Amino acid sequence: MWQAENVRDRLRALYPACDVQILGMTTRGDQILDRALSKVGGKGLFVKELEVAMEEGRADLAVHSLKDVPMELPEGFSLAAILEREDPRDAFVSNHFNTLAELPSGAIVGTSSLRRQALISARFPHLVIKPLRGNLDTRLRKLDEGEYAAIILAAAGLKRLGLPERIKAFLEPAESLPAAGQGAMAIEILSSRYDLISALAPLNDVLSSQAVLAERTVSKAFGGSCQIPLAAFAQIDNGNMYLRAMVATPDGSQSCKAEVHGKATDFEDLGMQVVASLRTQNADAILAVCRESEQA
Image (cartoon, rainbow, N blue to C red; front, side, top):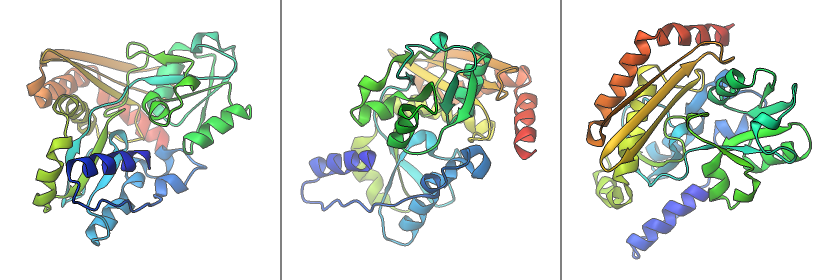
């Protein structure tokens, strides 16, 4: 809802004569909280109902966390704008510990992400990783009630909702490479709505778009979804892009990593270079193991 209100306010500022209203909806991804996303359908659970609302004419556009948007959009839909990215890092949240390294053996860490699970398990095999679902308030409540010694959340969500003080430590990309699109918001529309394409263009942030589209190129090549532990993160400085990616098994026992540098305008090509490098390191075989374990 914060994201929808943010876009509404930006559009009202751009077009004062335009009546911008929010159609509040609850998606399947919000409703199913007793199972991991990887077990119940993945990223599409957060967007399907919103797409139906656009098809039926009840909504003109939908605002998403980009990391929740499937790599392949349904036919007839497109992303009209990617807004300036918020902090893309993961955040360590705990009431009694300051870092992951401080957690004692057997401490329970909550996360909804197979990517985070793999990265934490590889570095701290003595910790216990358990699923954590629900909105931000629900996750923090479970931590406060003692179900977890610590939880890992997206820093962007905590900052946007005015809760930066809950962050005990930021996990830098070197230790916890973000998910593709993490921290970015995207606006989805019907591809036929050419009027909206031009109206939403001022909200598009070029650098954020280049970075997250490079990341999504990597994720798309491997069928990116909640079912696979995959990270992809691009940084841009003076027109140059530094793109890193990783795939791993959920327990972190097998992984491969790749990185490339190049012009930010070549974002798709850089993404495919990373894909090629990962594939020479048997990334497809690693991900096949992940999918087999999920099906089992």
